[in-house]
Length: 513
Image (cartoon, rainbow, N blue to C red; front, side, top):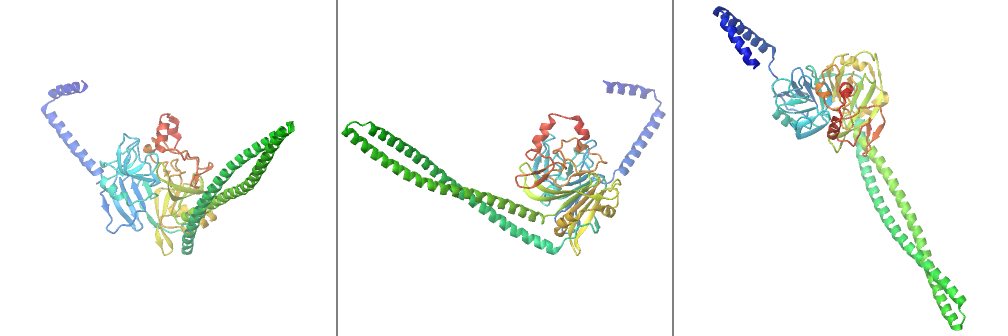
């Protein structure tokens, strides 16, 4: 009705205008439309195009998503290898800028949050639903917070990436730059060789300890069965001895009560038989008791052997795990906000509800010079082995200090360096940031850090999956990995999401990130 009334009024007004005025108005409108169209064409840059590098590509080491340019670029050890347009989050559902890593991959994934939406070739970045995946690209930001890539590009890329690959989401255009600095790890070839040999030796010892523990359990089970069987026989023999003693007592009473010679003779014969049975039952009971003691001692020794074998099995498994971790790329996160250094390595142990478990045994306080001065967010990555040990690059996504100055301000504890640096490998990284670790960092993630000075709508509107309490008690999983923080390792993030969604807390969305 409102539209029809407006049209009618416009028609009346047009009839009252003079023809010359109408011509002038039409001319102005046409020129205005042409000018606006020209300005729009000039303001909107050409969308980025999908392209491979003009060389043979290696395995991807990192991906950088530019929210400004709506483009993702993948890098191997020698530079960029793949580029493609993307579609990030819309206003109030913005894709969070920050530092992430691939946590899980699923070829045919459907959203648990948005009406079962198809998210093919999904590569998860957070457990609350931020991911890289194939999707429609209208040429501008259009997602609920994920990073959509072209369908074909996402499919070709899926098998090339690995769990733990670094994904950097930058508010502006960013690229890795070569860097050298004394604080960046310099591995030692002899240390790496020794660690590899030690890992092989400990793997064999762990296998032998596991086999010995299994054999000890079998021997203990046999001893327990023998002891149980002999114990049952012993109970029967004790019952027979008790009955024989009772019969002898009755025979003694009968003999004492006998009055005639014939009665006395019968009672005496009965007593002799009872005495014989008592003697026989006693002999059998004594023999069985001696055997039982031997079996019980054997059973106890077998149980002690199982305990010793299990202790050795746990110790060798722990040593083997530490040796394996020494040969994994290491990731360090240094936070100006918490004045702490965190270390993580992927254990490649699958978790039942998705992803892989990350070892998080090192968390130490550090010294940052001028702690009140912004340091920025810089991602240092060992791209490949070089003449001096490792060739490093840095990506800066949040301004503060220059990358080298940021490293100059940090003092890493020497014991941490001694434990990590000698066996550092390509793909190792050091992330320096003003930010604390995100609440999304948990036992199934590497590091998640979100820039607090950038829009986070697509992140804040999603339920978190952990408490993010990095200073609480350590939790040791069944696989003996330390899990830093107060995390419910039994929970399923999808179930937790829906359970918490049923009881909304408006204050959480303001302060829960």
